[in-house]
Amino acid sequence: MSSQWIDVAAKSGGKYGAYLSLPPAGKGPGLVVFQEIFGVNRHIRAVADQYALDGFVVLAPDLFWRDAPRVELGYEGADRERALVLMKGADPKLLAEDIKTTVAALRARPETVGKVGALGYCMGGRLAYFAAATAGVDAASSFYGGGIQDHLDRVASISCPMQFHYGAKDTAIPMEAVEKVKAAFAGKKAEFWIYPDAGHGFNCWDRSAYHAPSSALSHGRTLAFLVPALF
Image 1 (cartoon, rainbow, N blue to C red):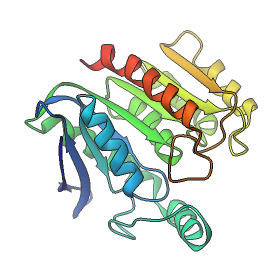
Image 2 (cartoon, rainbow, N blue to C red):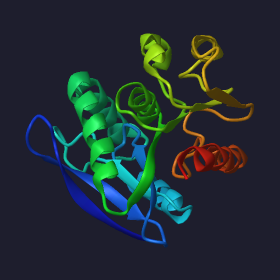
Image 3 (cartoon, rainbow, N blue to C red):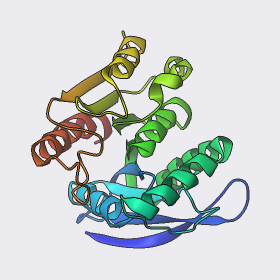
């Protein structure tokens, strides 16, 4: 496995950084990893490396590059407050552009063989959902994607398989919201996993919400979902 930061040309002008992690074989199907609101920090880079070791060519774009290039934030106090400001200040139209540009950039990489999927956490979970609706990915997995229930008009545009992971103890995403998403995907290729003992952010080992059994189980389920869809 090897990794590096690369530059991606933005549709609206300028360039943004993206963390590229390559599998031991040097090539494989592509996987875009969308960050939480805390930037492409050490956890997101570790997740990218984790999936690279699983055989994917992984690209994690810096989504806050216009306001705070390569920002890395913690999960509490002032860092959390700054992360929330950055999220609220991000232009949805420009984010939508960056989603498409990142997927296209990964498809164009010489190391990418065949299909491309999307994976994301929290804000990134919502963006993985948008990638399924607008960027032509071949599969998408969303971990505790906040706000998806407010954008269910996008469901009609999704034809690829989708996977959702939620914590039953997630106070930010109540089960009523999960049920709305589930109902909207009736008849679609979608699977939903609920982790009874997990809250929001359960996959992140740098957060107090980390729940190792749910994290391990969700990783296995994500691989079981992505491998047949992308390889």
